[in-house]
Length: 311
Image 1 (tube, helix red, strand yellow):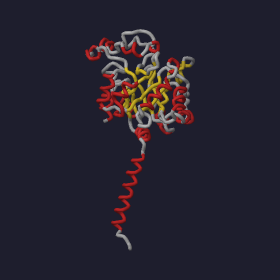
Image 2: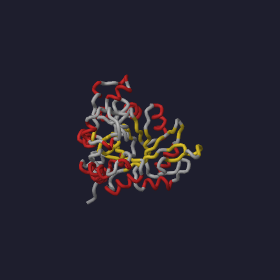
Image 3: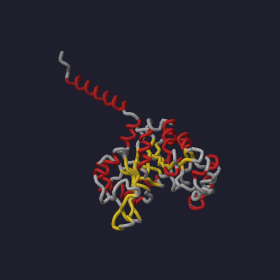
Image 4: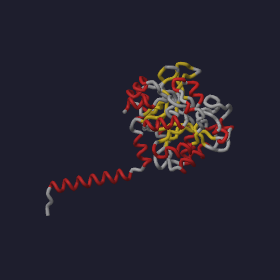
């Protein structure tokens, strides 16, 4: 019996729709996260740290409320092996304590005030609620936000934080953050990223780079840890070497007020499978300029400004 062409077309349409639905259902959360990196990412640098004390719950709550793509944080390890969100190697700048963070236990760090300094430095944004803010553990953040957001975590100063990668992978696995597509791990230290990959090959990694003037030849730029040549000498093969273990690259755009990369650098990285995220961009004009270049994401202390441009 010959079927009516309309019925055949409808059947094919239903089949195609069902196939697409099945394919979509088979996309894992981790695969979806990597696919989402093809879109522009708003990365809240230490939370909304232009509006509240960096790396505090107040800063992360604000950024989450605004709907950023990633909460960015630096992870260090305490003397008793706990992971805490803190940028500096010393606690002096953003707390009422002094000394190296790794010399303190978590209990000792929790007793510090990491909020009052912000009020003293930013009178126009001061808030009594910031006073007495406590340092956060990675568990604190995961327990607060869970799978409601994504996390962009830096393995900070690995040479000062022995065991950091092992502890981080253990915590990520305990909270199912990797399989659920909730985390990117970034580092300037290639060895730290490679160690993360050895511990769990599914962790998406971001290679951070910092380009600056070569002290021996001020007409040339070099990369801080020599993970790539300077931008003028970088080749497809250099980007491909990074792409063997990383899903993206994070870089500065300027050094001492001068551009160190350009739109061609970004296009070359992207052509070799590396989305480009630039840190740390706070002025609207600079944000727009980099968006016009085709950047894949920006780290910023003022995610509200960036969201206004991209939404």
